[in-house]
Length: 111
Length: 121
Image 1: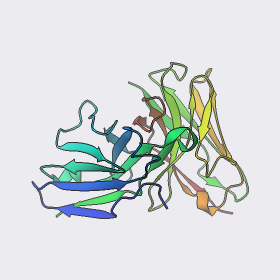
Image 2 (image 1 turned 180 degrees about the horizontal axis):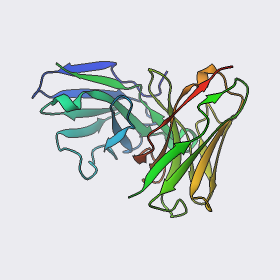
Image 3 (image 1 turned 90 degrees about the vertical axis):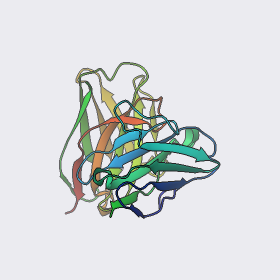
């Protein structure tokens, strides 16, 4: 069982917006502005698309945005495209004992 | 451009020790600020952070794996390694090495392509 809880799947039509939630606790998401999000296509390595809650690395589309509220982080993909179909994982710093925790992943399907 | 490449046996017998290496090219593992990490993905499952090592040699491990994990670095080869002892079928997974460029806070910007390790007799 993963430390952070994500919905197993989310779907949307091309052009639509979808939001993926990532629920943690006051020991991780709720305590640190250190949530990152990863996109993973089958057979490929994960790719960071968001770090430190809402920052996008250079080269990542601005269709990806994210935020935190309390113990829940959220990733929004706007203008959904076929290439966005992938698994998405949230990740949070969880303090000096646990360090890093991942969510169980969300499969995004473009209808 | 920093690149990572995992290497090691794809098949390990139960109760033995899994050993993997991650070779770093295009940069030095001794440069400060980066945490060199191991992460795995069980078949059909999510990602699991195993641990990381800092350039000083300090190590940090997932509490659930801590008793079996050792991460070390060899600066002469510019690589870092993972050893996981007493493996069982539950350790069958794709193992990734990755760089955390934000002080060990879970921001992994560079990944190896991953290597599949199967635990079976």
